[in-house]
Image 1: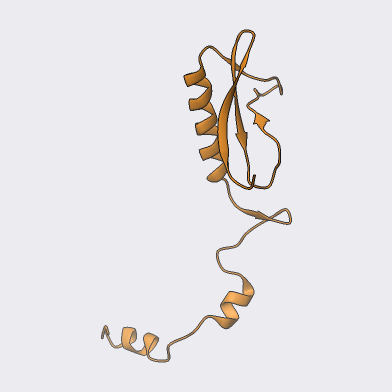
Image 2 (image 1 turned 120 degrees about the vertical axis):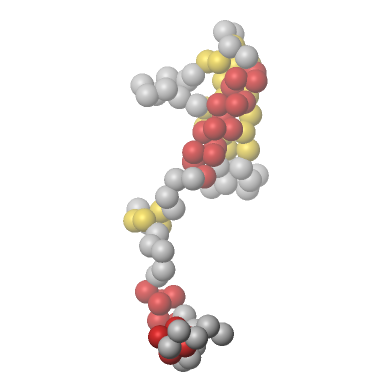
Length: 96
């Protein structure tokens, strides 16, 4: 359903590794640089590669409508609560 998953599938010459992303309804088989499915010799190797692929996916920069998400949006900058004495105390060398 709406959850991340990894897994394997037995094929004639070994095992395929796959990942499922939250926003997709199907498994994505791990593929090489040519787009061909990677056949692993063992189920453990396929599952380890799927885990590594999922971690790599989760650690990619977040995108929003094709643009990278900035550290702080303009709205957050406008509405971020500011403490009037925070800057004055730091300038005088005083820490609260």
